[in-house]
Image (cartoon, rainbow, N blue to C red):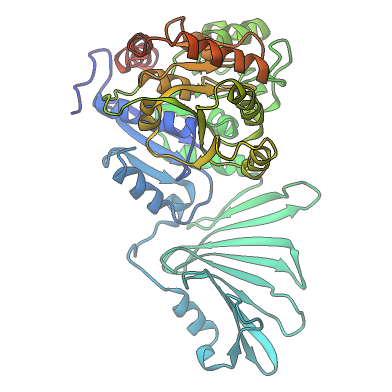
Length: 506
C-alpha cells in the first residue's frame, strides 16, 4: 500500500530519473534504480524514468516491468526516440507491407527463393538481379529487409522491423560496402521520418555522428550528447528534481538550461584502478567530479567512496552525500539446505568468478558434500564452464543462469559468496543478509565492509582462492546466526533511506 508523502517532501515536485538504458534482464544498477522509483511512488512523489539508448521494443520491456512488479503502472517511462517519433497510430502492425507495395508494386509475385536450404533469407529477383531479400527469425518473424542496386553485389540499405513487424529504422551503406554505414533514418508507425543519424567520421571507433531532428523546423546536433541535452531542455521544467544514473548523461544534464536540482548517482568506482584507492580518477568520472555547477549534488553508496573522493577533490566536500541502497522486505518461507552455497552475480571478468570456483575446488576437498550454484549471465559463461570441467567440478559447481527470485535462492542456501575486484555497493550482499543468508566476501572497494558486521558475514584476509576457502571453512565450523544476520539489514531499511533522500532533495 502506498504511503502518504513525508511532511519534508514537496508534493508539487517532479522527480525525473535519467539513465542510458533499461535492460529487460538486468543487474544491480537497474534493480536499484527501479526500487528507488517505487520508493518515491510509495511516498506519493510523481516519478518518471527516461532512457537514451535505442530500443524499438521498449514497450515490451515496460509491460514486463509492470507485470513483474518492478515499476508501478502510474510511473511514466519514456525514451528519447519514442518521444520524438510521436506515434499517432499505436496499434499499427505489418506496415512493412505498405512500404514495399509503395516502393515495389507487385514485389510478392517476383521470382523468389532461398539460396541455402535451411537459410532464413529469401531473395526476390527482378530482371535477373536481386531486388531485395527478407531475413526471418527462427519463429518466422521478419527481422530485416535488404534492398539492392543492380550495380553492386551487396545491398545498399537495410530496413529494420520491430516485434509488431513495423519498420522503425532504415540503414544506408556506402555503395557496395556494408562495412561503412552512411546514415540511419528513423520512422514512426505512419512511415514518417522523424530523425536522421549521419555517420561522419569513420576514423573514430565508434564513428562520430550528427543528428538531424525532423520537426517543423529541423534541428541539427553535431554530437549525440548535444542531442541528449536538447531533449532534456524539451523535457524538463524549472523546479524539477533530476537524478542521473549514467555517466554518459552527465554532460547533457549539466548543459541543460533549466533551474533544477541535479543529482548524480554514482553506482561504481570512480578510480582509474578500482582495486587501488590511491589511483587517479577514471575518465568517465572526471567531468562530474570537477563540475562547479552549484545546483548539482553527488551521491555515493558508501562512506569510504565519499571519503576517497573528498581526498582527491577537496572542493567537492559540500556537494557529496552518502545514500546506500535500501533493503527489500522479504518473508522467510523456504527451508535452508545446509550444504548449498550460492553466488548471484553478472558473469563478467571484474566479478572474479574464476577465483570463486578455484576457492570452491579447495573447499570441496575438505567438504565434498557441499555444492555451489552460480546465478547470472554474462560474457564469462563459456570460460567459467571450461574451468569447471578442467577442475572436474561438474557435479559440484553449477551455472544456473539468470534468476528472477534471488530471495528464494538466498533463503535456501547456507551462505553466499562475493569475489569481485570492485563494487559500487554490492547490492547482492544486502539482499543476501536481508534473507538471513550470511556472506563471505573478498575485501572490496566499496560496500561489503560497510554492510556486514561480525554477525552477518566474513571478510577474507586476502583476495585469493585460498583465503576464500579458509573463510568458508570457518563458516562451516562456526555458522553465523541467521536471525542476527537478518537483523543487520535493518540499518538499510526503506524508512532510513527515504529519510536521507528527503533531507537531500525536498
